[in-house]
Image (tube, rainbow, N blue to C red; front, side, top):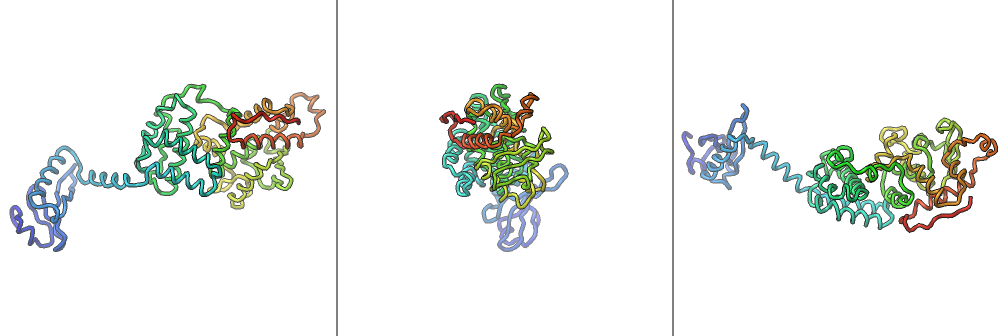
Length: 404
């Protein structure tokens, strides 16, 4: 065919490409497969941009679409790349929304009995509905970016610092869930604390830096922690219940645990004072150990790194607290929480609490007379501590007054 095409040419065109002029071609692949394509060159590279099927686009309409495309190319637009971008965005926008993902996560925790208390699920739903859903609830988890999460947090980052940290941690957990399940193919978590806080104002030190959690908040913290999965959550709960040091817990092996007698014998080489330390295990601590044994897949370590072997890393529990929205806390700080509680909320002698923390006795005379390790008194103390930690509303808890 020579010159410009006619309607009759389009009807009887043989397979192949037929030129109409100014970059417009009719492409025929068969009697039922005819379409318009526009050929253009951008930065020295040839591109072919589809303009639609002959069934939907007439010859005149194809020429108009060709003319519009020519203008866009002159303005620097890569039509092929733009079409790919639009199709990808359309595909992503039709994915699971953040609200749907959050509800799936919460329901899964309830169904799997990870959250045995319905109040926990209610707290998550209420928090997300108040602060997250208005901004990102309707968006696909595929397209949400760090800037979107910042928009969620900005209104409360200073005015409601504790709430903001909790919201961020919950959003991060939901995105981890989505990434693991393939509902978000972008592996970067937009709520990860490190990169995120660079886009937020610095919180006042009084709000942002508390290494030790006030004991009045331990009930709510433990409720949140027990609703989380993974070896790091179990290790952190055990650390809190035993008031042990991080290294002692992470290096702990099953050979040191006597579940029948409810005793953990920490070897001297793992202790700061280089003396063996016996830790009485409360029923709550034994329950954690039972869960850890089930999840540990036969490892010699009580809290193994199930992915790589060996024990958990030193950062595992800190990362868990970041996901909980409490990055200001340290694992060691819970020993201070325990010590403050014992001093202010119980009548146990201070030496019992000090022995529970495996603190060395600075007074040599006292050390010479104290030959025992106050084990049975420490067992009663740790049982009381475990009971306090399970309270769901710390502000309503009456002071525990026990005699050592």
